[in-house]
Length: 188
Image (cartoon, rainbow, N blue to C red; front, top):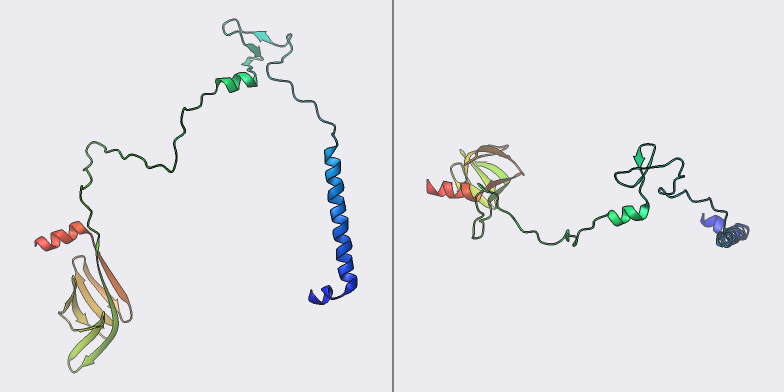
């Protein structure tokens, strides 16, 4: 494209094309200002020929072919708009349903999270050691609410209140304990 833009004949061709398109759009706008032939608007719904329409004696409205016709202004006048439109971004009041427990008055305790990252495993004699969260641990040691059950070359086994999990070498493990469960653990 750069090679073409460096050739004077190509730039002249683009300039002539631009002038033609601008001229056509200006002429088009000039034509749109002239009144065009318009189609006749459709007759209003209430403007029905008297011979084809019958008047309903109960309501006094025109009935054409078994259907009642109403004019547009009457339809718009019959619309009912609410006095105020609610703000969709406004704060909404909460309602308490009977039988539901009331929300706690004080602040809710957040979930407790125990996270471990296994970065190294090695054997020293008959003892297998693991580097967990920058601490050297062996089987039977605890870190938070997690207990290391077994240290293997592939990773470690940890036990917790939910059960037992394997943490592979280089992996991380997170134990999420809800506040109610945490309270029950401390009672025992």
